Length: 354
Image (cartoon, rainbow, N blue to C red):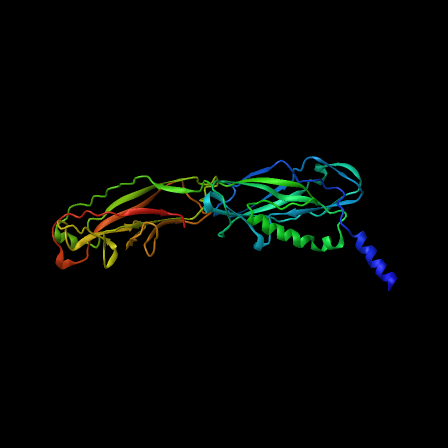
């Protein structure tokens, strides 16, 4: 029993932790700068980049066969995800190192350069719909995303608890504004500067303020055809920041809205003023669907059941300039109440990016 006890005691003593290479504090390499502005969009929500650490400086090892471990702070574990809320959370981007580097061993003792510990790594960036760390601007200054630690001389207990401690530190890092709680084994860190200021596709209405004048008709003429006074017009559109391949980088929808609608039929524009013609209003059609009247929304931000007069999916082809052929005609909604007068009514073209 005494011999066994002495063996366990000696084992415990010889397992004490002595780092043989690490210095007194972390040394940061040259920051890696990446601009995601033209790499991430709703059409291409994921981008993966390959990088190499830029550790610099020198260190000394008192023993040979020193082992070094890399900790990827940008975790692939969703519980510890790094999500950057650029421009006050307007754009949420997750960053994760997808290939944690393997441990590295330096066989010789003595002086070494930090470049001997440089390693390639891969980062995946993804647009997400999750909360994260709020950034007031378009740039995230990450003081460290991948650091290397001296693993030589670890005790058995430290070897067992090392992975758990690193997970705990990742959680602390996320909740402390990206400040890693280093210890004396941590040697070199890799900063990264991430920018995201996307120039997304937008469209505008070239002939905004358009007035469509229908012909003057007598009351009998209103019943002479199914679309009396049919008057064609066009909505001219221009789109900016269309991709070099001629595609939109996000979904775009267009619809019409109005506050001057017949209460029982949202496809009829009316003039409710006392001097206006009664019992008759206006309808619009898309000229490529002449038998289907356009339905209007009462909201300028939500289409609801209104007709989508144009749409394009994220990643689909989009011309920088195009025309939407439309037409307007008189519509009698109360034949017994039709009276003479003018009809002045309006609608708004709405462009949304759902």
